[in-house]
Length: 295
Length: 318
Picture 1 (cartoon, rainbow over the protein chains, first blue to last red):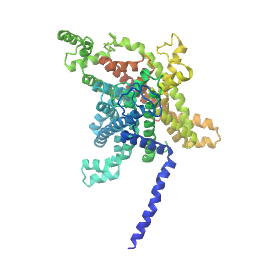
Picture 2 (cartoon, rainbow over the protein chains, first blue to last red):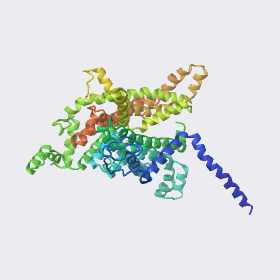
Picture 3 (cartoon, rainbow over the protein chains, first blue to last red):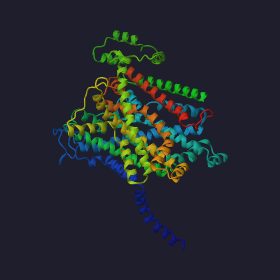
Picture 4 (cartoon, rainbow over the protein chains, first blue to last red):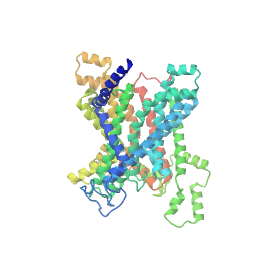
């Protein structure tokens, strides 16, 4: 009986503390909080694009190159499509391509890094050399060549970007596996007769999670930028998907002077989305990776 | 040391060999071979003509022979033929090299001039409003697509000053001022992004160095603040910065791909995009390989410079 009141006290004390934890994060890390807010807006726009959009993003109309106003909040493009609705739907494409390619690249690369770091020896050597090869070209150049070889489509854009991200993920995970492998608890687990697979899965993998999360947020911005650049060059997401990068390439070609909003808003959307993920990524890195704190 | 250099050269060779295989396979994955593309415009295809052309180009041979022949040609500096221009590829690439090089050097110059001082100031003013402002600015640089930044700047200049970017390339030997004016904006647009990276690494290494004992000693001796920061601290913080500059220089070409396209500059990076769009695969393959060679050797040079810049680092035993 005596324990019940003390439980109550703990809960009562925990509640205000949780509320102020968020406040503390905002106060200690205002930039990270701002990034979180931007990412939240991006997520909402992507999830509820149909709710937020005022027009059909792909339907053309006779209202061509209308300036921003009450009917068309951000104006219309050369085919009479509402720019605001296109930008909102573009969030979906950007986020889907960005997230899937980052996760795919990070998981595949992470597994390679995990095996390569844990097994070591020749496996590690070969994996490392393969990663070297993948990193011998600038991100965009490799993505370009991949996209060109595979042909422009949504899936191929995702594949091209994830292939570029994978070696970077492998590096990060391998480095942390190499450190974790030497810890005493890994040694004792082995001494107790735990199998290699189980040690890797249960004792090492969970501990690479921190760097992994940091990596994913850090690469997400890069993936969104890569998609924009590929689509801008006509090698990424094809029509009719409203991709931010693609919107810029059509707008840029002819109508920039007559209709500057066609250039301004899609680019602003890309920049804010990437800015948000970068801010959040930095804040996460600072709080999850104490070695880099303050840098 | 000598074995280290040998080992590194060997690894560089293996990397480039791997890259050549990767590129070769990728270009064979691409839909349609070069004869399809050449005959595409003609509309009518005579199978005998096609076979003759395939034999002439050597693409009827087994893949391994094709690969070996391409590699041999590449090593001898024969970059094949551009189908679009109907010229040897090297003749198309050669006049484009100085354009890309000039742009890369200018961009790198801007990024160092902006990045290093901002990084130092940000580290010294850590946690102050100026630090936050500079960090936000640098992160913004990493977040904006450089091609978009370039478009916005052109738009603003046209609107405010009626300035119209020259759409034809001006050689520095014809008119140096016009040439520099033409390169200024693209170089700034690309340089801004790299400057953000340089600023970040400068800031973090400066923060580390500023905590060290000899800096405290310098302060305690009553030495002037500017001298302590810019002479004593920056000198020791410069190693990672130099590394990054070396690596960035090679990787800059990624940013140039889009910027050269936006500004209509006839550089190598733009040629790569052109070649991809016109499916001039031999050129794509050779240009990408050329870029890989530059990147791998830039990395190698930076690593070797390490020992020279920091005598504490010894590779011989490693």
